[in-house]
Image 1 (cartoon, rainbow, N blue to C red):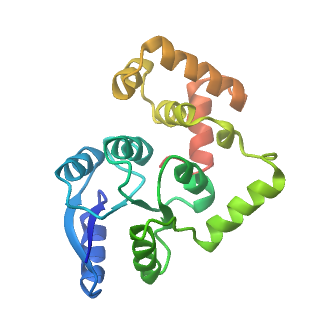
Image 2: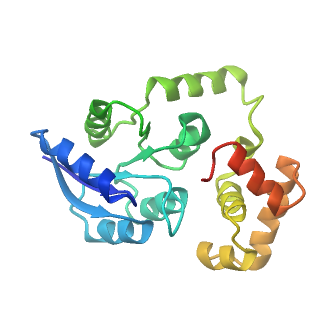
Length: 211
């Protein structure tokens, strides 16, 4: 039996997934959470084989939640189920420890297949993500979108700034000094050739990185 925890801020999504999984003889939902903080509590309690998590949550981004969860339980498979298109986040999240990435428009059976795959200790890579990875290798890392050139920490700071968070708030949330966050901000601005926080927000909205 594969024990699953569902993390999504929409109750109707959690209910739909729970109902669908109930028809699978080898899957059982043992926990639910509506945000990253609750997800961490579920992880602390243990007794989870696979964590199925949305990327967009009210209290913190799915990227931050993923990093915190993998820091606490590095061997726990985390499968991202998101409304964002694969090309925006999939490869980045796989590099940060996610075991797989699925778009919410996928066939429900794909989610079941992905859960079974990551539970066996393997990565789940959809055909779309496989193509992205192949194109990235073929291009040798060239012709990337500006945000794809950012490091993990830079991407975290970028997304928080784009959502309107202050440097001080980001410093508290990421347990970094204000000076360090400011340094990351400067690097982000330079790499993306942007001049202000409003430019960051416009870029993130335009590329579907925030809602």
